[in-house]
Image (cartoon, rainbow over all chains, first blue to last red; front, side):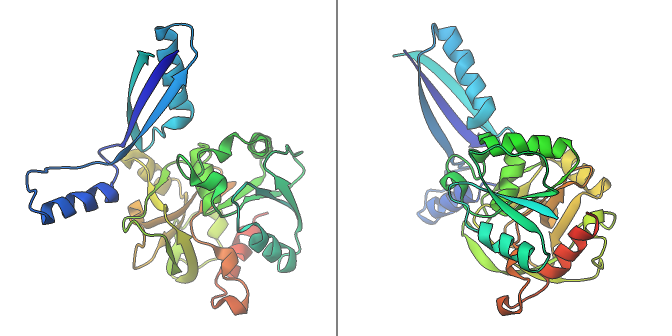
Length: 82
Length: 220
């Protein structure tokens, strides 16, 4: 069994109003060191793939097929044995 | 005209559009449950507004794998018309049948109000009957209607007359180039966030949706 960890964020070119709002609130709290803040989502997959390389390929395929919209989002994928 | 309205779990504007098409435009309307395949004998397929699959993952992302959407591809291949309204538009872009994506409104709020629209591209046959100067009063109701596409796609949409409508005056949701709806290259697939079906009858306040449907159906 393997675990696939997918971190999805909006591309730099896409407006992230949620991130902008949260950053503004942090600034209002005096936390001026926050230069930027982007909000994304995290998906965890448990995979019955036969080995780690297959698990990586499977997870990557699922990202491209459904989990990530390549028009607006990018993702970072990490696959580990459980 | 024979028209199909596809229903997903969470569709909620299916009856609205069906009633308008039946009563005002004399279409023979059938409802298609998303789990069903359908034969390509409809002139028009409508994907209605709502919250298909609870808007889980991304609006419209899960609906595109339904059997009815596979049939929709055959319907499209035979050169027939598709209209996606609101969540229907989101499903069409998530399916890759229309370009771009619809993201969270810039205000982060679900906006339900009437907005002003104008024709998006003068050469688009679907809006040929509408004067380019005409300002249309049409309701919107969405939380994720901010249209996004990369610069090349935006240019291509403009160059190919594929912008169906733009917001006129106030841009309510942050859509790039004020885009409220787009069409496919052959103008047979149309998607828009506003709800023209909510502005046909006198009781709904505005009847400007009638001008939109009159123009759409003129080319069929």
